[in-house]
Amino acid sequence: MLILADDLGYSDLGAYGSEINTPHIDALANAGVRFSNFHTAASCAPTRAMLLTGLESHLAGVANIPEAIPDYQRSAPGYAGVLRSDVPTLAELLQSAGYQSFMSGKWHLGAAPQQLPSQRGFIKTFALADTGADNWRQQPYLPIYAEANWFENGERTDLPDDFYSSKTIVDKALEHLASRDLDKPFFSYLAFQAVHIPVQAPAAFRDRYLQHYNDGWTALKQARADGLVRAGIMLPAAFTHAPTTADWDALSEAEQAFHSRGMAVYAGMVDAMDHHIGRLVAYLQAQGELDNTILVFLSDNGAEGSVISRTRPGGPGFTSAWFRSWLALNSYTTEPESLGEKGSFYEIGPSWASASVGPLAWYKFFAGEGGLRVPLIISGRIRGQPIATSGAVAGALTWVTDIAPTLLDLVGAPNNDVDFSGYSLTPLLTNTDASLRGPKEVVGYELGGNRALYQGPYKIVYNRFDAATDQWQLYDLANDPGETQDLAEAMPDRTAVMIAAYDRWADEHGVLPVADDYNQGMQVMLNGFAQRPVLWLPFVLVGVLIVVVLLVFLVFLWRLIRRRAPA
Image 1 (spheres, rainbow, N blue to C red):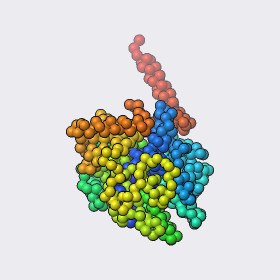
Image 2: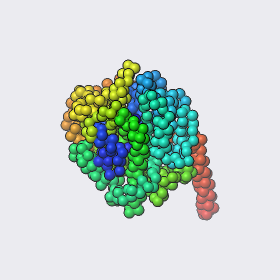
Image 3: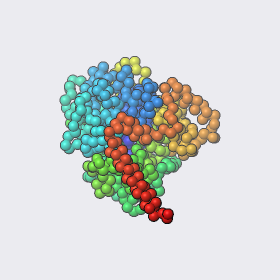
Image 4: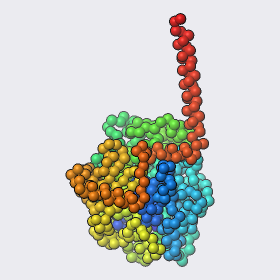
């Protein structure tokens, strides 16, 4: 059972030092191994491609989310934005070993009929094709989609009246398991929308946290750093705030209350996901299957730091009136009292996101550890025997491409001669002090122009943000996981060697450069406009109307001035 959270930060679980209540996920951690140095891409679709194929994202055809790929990259084979048809998925590989595979949740690896999970080895599916959607209703969360594109077994479907994403995703997974052939093993892939924007949660879960975040994001980042130490995940580490973090103390009391309540919704959404994962585990226990099931839990990237909907002060990057107009047209509200409930819209933004990743630097989209390093828990039993050392923490550098070969290794399934980019993690499950990669081996990474390369304890990173970060930086992650001390000037030889290694890696993997003015969020909107211009018609008409009114006013003013001017 492979369980994927969406945009969950490194320290968002109780087992990783969080104040959020996640007893069912924590129980998996206590019975298995937590990974402290596990990495994904900093955005969802590339991670999902690597997770389900074991191949680096450029090799799998998903170098970036399809919504953010500029036209000058689309002709390259690694930039299709959908899984390559000639690359087998984990479901297809397990199918050849006699497994029946099921999928429930967010897919985001292709929306055409031949690209849906029903055509990629899963025999029963309930899938969202988009990058995200509302958690209460069947509607899009951005004006780049005409509708929320949900499919069941390859056909468009309507959501149930009692839909809440975490609940329904588990409901469908349970339906699939109940219908399976009991004589065959199963593979179940659950991909939650939690905690992707819009951040929404039932009031009962939200209300548990209403008093938790009154001290703000600075205090939370420190608390999370301390929690990771108590949980045995990380040694005490220095950290800095991302430059996008606002000054909590500079906010008004009303602004603080608004954002404190919004973060309570986020915590409630994590809590609700854990609650429904508990239903899965209970089902397996009741069916007598828990002692013969492998369970893997991870996040697809770090916490989401975008600001797209902010209608109240409290963070950088306020949006223009056009998006607030779109929210209103789609019956969204940002009123504090209803945050999290049906019809509400909230995203935690860069300040909370920086705290959600604990002492790590940056968050989703960036190549800092806060965007790439996420929780991974592997637990379970095979024929009653535990597959991992209970409660242990593995510190070796690991990557999302390691998951597919690990699962195939654990169940003894053939890999059909796939040359995986990753390695099986099975040696770490019983010897958590072991290393997986040699001291000279490199792991490269690129997404949207942000890039990194790992070698031993060192990492070079290039984040496209401003003059201070638009250059290669070098960090010793063993002693500085918070990436606070740039060693590039102090260690120029190592920096140069690693930059050269990155260039070789990028050339081997078909990495393309991005334009100097490339902005991922802006590219998403531009692509949305180009592909669905009718969605933007109301805003164009409003803009035209404003221009016409302004011209009429200027003509009137000009005539008035002329009339009153002396002869």
